[in-house]
Length: 102
Image 1: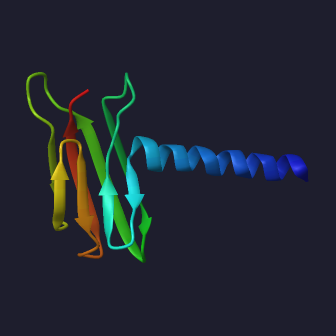
Image 2 (image 1 turned 135 degrees about the vertical axis):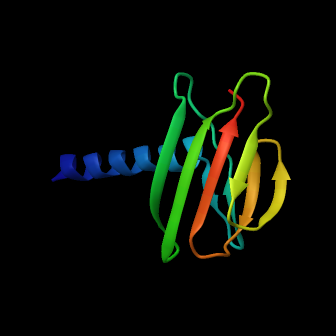
């Protein structure tokens, strides 16, 4: 019983690590903060999951050498700073594609 609880907790911590720190998805009260970080050796990450009664789709890859980081989204970008974007919670379905500098 204790080991099952420990396994669930460890699994939840791995999901938080992946979503919050690698995909960089950090929900805030009025916007979604996206700050992705690809680990060395990863060329691309794609993820899709339910989010606030709708769906969030992410597609992050490495930018070509000498090219700047690039973000595209169907959401309204409230603020943009280097490798981070603040995106309004409109529309309900949000997609984000990024080419990151490794």
